[in-house]
Every structure is written in C-alpha cells, then in structure tokens.
Amino acid sequence: MDLGIRGKKGLVCAASKGLGRGCAEALAEAGVDLVINARGSEVLEDTARQLSGRYGVNVTPIAADITTSSGRAAVLEALEGQADILVTNAGGPPPGNWTDWNRDDFIRAIDSNMLSAIALMQALVPGMMERGWGRVVNITSQSVKSPVSILGLSNTARAGLTGFVAGMSRQVAGSGVVVNNLLPGIHATDRAYALDKGVAQAEGIEITAARRKREATIPTHSYGLPEDFGATCAFLCSQHARFIIGQNILLDGGASNSTM
Ligand code: NAP
Image (tube, rainbow, N blue to C red; front, side):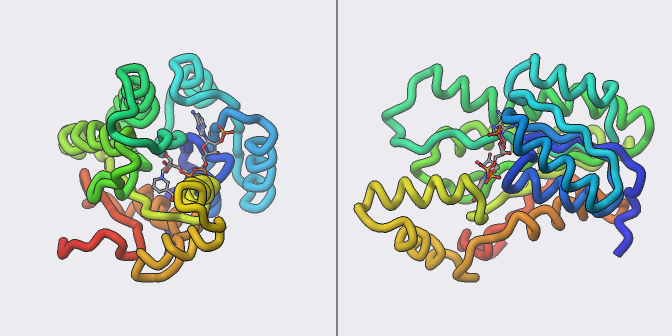
C-alpha cells in the first residue's frame, strides 16, 4: 500500500532503539525525511546512517534529552520549526510501589511522559494546521487502558497525556491534523528486557524464565516487535488515517482482557 507521505518531513523522538526506531524505520521506508532524536549520539548516528542508506531519505540525528526544554529546542531548530509528522516518545519511568514515590518523582514522570509530548505538539501542530495537513502519534502504553501496578508513575503521567489528546485532537481535526496515541503492550526492546530483569530479581528466577512467564500472559505467547509497531505508526501517519481521530490503539497481543 502506498502510504502517500513520500517527501513529508517528520520528527521521531527517542528513536535510536526500540519502538521509536521501529517508527522511524517504517516512516523512512515510506519516503519521509526525518529528524530523529535520543540522548546518546553513537547509536543514534548509526541508526540515522542505516536508515538514510537503506531508504534514500534524509535523516538528521539530534542527540538531546527530549524531556528538557533545551533538548526540544535543539530538535525544533533542526526542523526549522516545522514538521508534517510528529512521533512523541521518551524513556519510561522506573517501576516501584505506590508508597515509594515523592513529589519530585511524579514531576519527573509527568515532565517526561506527558508535558514533553504536549510541548512538542504545541510547537509543531499550529504550523500543520496552517498548512492544512499533519499527523501526530504519541507512544504511550497499554497501562493507559489496563494499569500495570508496578508502573504507577507511568499509569499516572500517561493518563494525563491521554486526557489532553482526547480534547485537543478534536480541536485540530478540522484543519487536517490527525492526532492519535499508540499503546504498546510488551515488545521485545531493551525496556522489556529491563522489566524481565526486574521480575527475575524480585522472584529469584532466571531472566529467560521471567520472559517465558511474561510471554505466557499474552494470547500470542510472544512479545511484539518494533517492526510491527512501526508499521502501525506509519499507517497512522499516512493519508489513509484522515478519519481516525483521538484514538488509543492497543498493540498488546490481546493481553488486556476486555471486549472493547
Ligand atoms: P527502549 O528500547 O529502552 O528505547 C528507548 C529509546 O529512547 C532509546 O533510543 C533511548 O536512547 C531513547 N530515550 C530514552 N530516554 C530519552 C530521552 N529522555 N530523550 C531522548 N531519547 C530518549 O524503550 P522502548 O521499549 O522502545 O519504549 C519506548 C516507550 O514505550 C517508553 O516510554 C516505554 O515505557 C513505553 N513502553 C514500552 C513497552 C515495551 O514493552 N517495550 C511497553 C509499554 C510502554 P538514549 O538512551 O540514548 O536516550
């Protein structure tokens, strides 16, 4: 299927590895010129080289912490203040127990997983509206629909972003801007391995046993792949997604047990 976005310009945040990289790869394959971001420059630059070499698009790597205002200023400067496609993403907050976290922990999580995405939308969506076309995908989590108890900071911050998008997406849809959230369940990335390790330590079992235990909770009996996730993201950024507004699309192998 031709996604109809060849020659568009996009920003994919937190994209040197994992789900962000999956999204960047699928957009590059669809012919989108990209600015990609992560904090560490080495893997990021390598990713940029691989994507531009493989797909013949321009990929500009900007090493910066996207949860800081200076980091966002650096990526916005590389975009000359404008993009047709925005994929927001950042690392997830650490696990813990609900009694563990203080105000600073909550502010850090809200800054990372709610306010940085909102700030990027506020910076880039007005230009999309003026030009009459835009696509935004926010990478959130299955925890928005089905809470993961040990990820209380994530549950909290992402619920805030979800509420913001629910209203804002309907305000901008009339100007040709499509905003949606993608909700990953467990995908085979460094983040998932770190959580496997946490389970292994907590339960005194091997990491492979912890992974098998977590895989058994998913109807597919396997983790999702960044490639699957990226392809869905690229579709939501395509011409064909114009009627999908303010949705929370779950990619979890059926793990969240609900009828709708
Ligand atoms: P990952 O494999 O650990 O990759 C994270 C990527 O983000 C790396 O490229 C990392 O590079 C970059 N990054 C992290 N913090 C950043 C920051 N502050 N500024 C800029 N770049 C940053 O993680 P993932 O599995 O792709 O997860 C992506 C998001 O989805 C996270 O918020 C995670 O909580 C959420 N999620 C993941 C899963 C899953 O199973 N994988 C499930 C539910 C939700 P640097 O370290 O070099 O910055």
